[in-house]
Amino acid sequence: MTRAIYPGSFDPVTFGHLDVIKRASKVVDELIIGVLINENKRPTFTMEERVQMIEEAVKDLPNVSVKTFEGLTVEFARQSEANVIIRGLRAVTDFESEMQIAQTNHSIEPEVDTMFFTTSLEYAFLSSTIVKEVAHFGGDVSSFVPANVAQKLKEKLS
Ligand code: ADP
Figure 1 (cartoon, protein in one colour):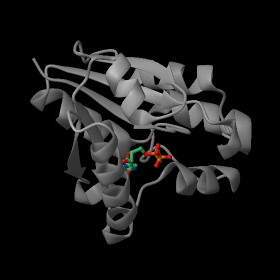
Figure 2: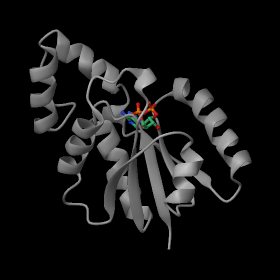
Figure 3: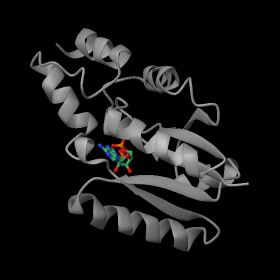
Figure 4: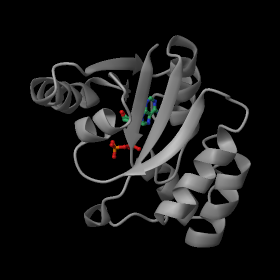
């Protein structure tokens, strides 16, 4: 059985993340989304809000669950008894840092491998940061994030 984790800040979850989640959930048996607790990143949404928004978005995917974690991603993989880390690649700009992270993780924990999903073209430009920027200036984010997330962004940012 292949159990994978998909770690990230998800501040908030976007259609880009959900595209990776849906595709990854088809190739692994079980997928655990790991929401990173890192107050140094000064998230816009609380950990509870981020988890709740993802849970709503993945409720129809039976092999996907959501957890939170602190500290090393490989430690979270170990605790979850997962041997695969899922990450998404949007552009060459992601490649360098993602390769460095994957190689570091593999050298800390050789039993854990990173699997990359390249973004679907329509989401290549999408990041949580850009979505928050659009929402902040009152723009329509309904084609970037699920409806419940768009509503939360409006309440919090506009
Ligand atoms: P982090 O703070 O760890 O980068 P993010 O929530 O920004 O967390 O992203 C989590 C993962 O999802 C990363 O691997 C990132 O490259 C990927 N990702 C983010 N947006 C997209 C997108 N539009 N298409 C594909 N992958 C994406």
